[in-house]
Length: 99
Image 1: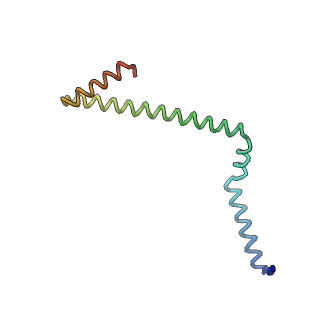
Image 2: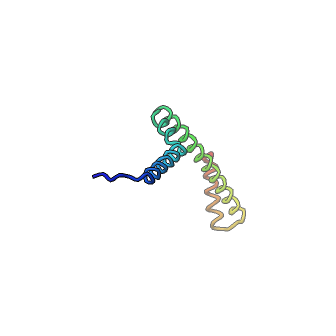
Image 3: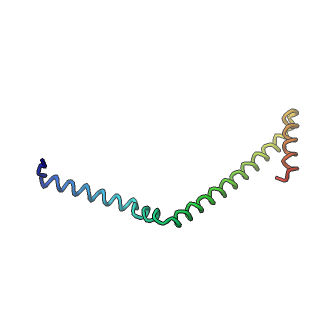
């Protein structure tokens, strides 16, 4: 059995529907759905994102390695007997490997 809705309830419901519709338009759901419907565009976008991540990882690893080797050379220059000899061997191995 259906009950009749009062005009105030209908207006409030319509207002909520309009507000939801505006929010969906603002969130660009339609553009996202259109993007997902084009497999080539999705693959290309993911390929570029992967390339950027890989490049960032390579640069970050290089910087961290350089900082680590610099810190090791500073410790060597302090002439701490046991640690200095060990680090000197590590640095020599790294330099000999061509890195």
